[in-house]
Length: 354
Ligand code: NAD
Ligand code: IPM
Ligand code: MN
Image 1 (cartoon, rainbow, N blue to C red):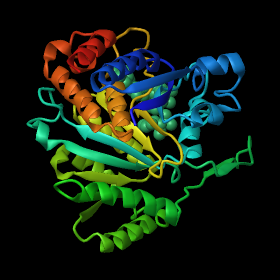
Image 2: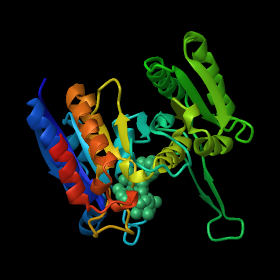
Image 3: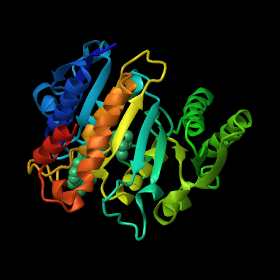
């Protein structure tokens, strides 16, 4: 199957700057591998759309993007005009939930030639996957405010962990670990302090590990785990965590490889009942938006993950090879990696390398 319809939502800020480079690279890969990619661009899931319509997305958004083979997403958020919880709960988090994208797969890799902020680390030392639970956990809308406006004011937000929800993300993580040479899985927990949900998470890990004796499993409390990301990143192969822990680890990991600007994210619905969504890990970066200096690699790498998901691993590898080649050349990097190029020039160099 070489023909695919892809929904494109660039979003806000640098999302609008890195998206054209993601599309440029995808078009280069499509040409080389004879793929027929149709891109349908949508202006919703952005704070500009909110300014015009008073909501982040139209009522029929699910029908408008649900029939596509995949969703290619930029970044959402413009906190000066729309509060972040409104813009993100009105867009990205709806996609993850409504399309049951329960896996958020986030590779972390130190690329050859890229200066590592951690002293003495070589590329092979940092090469792991963060597998983040993406539909429940700490990201729950159950809760509320009581005694509002009084001194007794209380806010409560429940963490929801279901057996099915934990088991399906763990099964995915174990499968991925099993498919890798080191077959090693690290579970992020906090069962010393979070005394109900986290011990339950650990229990499910222990249960599943009985059925996968070839995968070696360890677990760390999230606090010391962040320390080991910095001090001993070579320990990790596949790291699985709850929604919030996975979020934190997937900014920290890429920061240890030089910049969060290169990190991609695949929001997967493994049964393929709904489209999966591919985006960079980073946000809309209001601090650098409009300057044309954002690193486009996270968006382009997300495009590679999308082609892999659509069954084109050869085209995906051509894209990641091109990324590696360009990042290895210090004259072809963007400012966040100390290089001289802008977003567009860097994107063009990667497309040319493909
Ligand atoms: P951010 O990721 O947007 O930026 C954090 C820092 O990293 C900034 O200094 C930024 O300049 C830098 N940075 C990010 N991407 C970069 C790139 N490609 N190249 C170079 N530098 C880059 O995180 P934030 O500042 O916490 O959030 C800004 C907005 O984005 C908020 O509205 C937030 O809610 C939203 N956000 C959206 C997503 C998403 O759509 N998936 C993810 C994270 C944050
Ligand atoms: C991410 C982002 C989102 C998250 C925000 C913007 C809601 O940080 O994709 O990592 O927390 O999942
Ligand atoms: Mn995040």
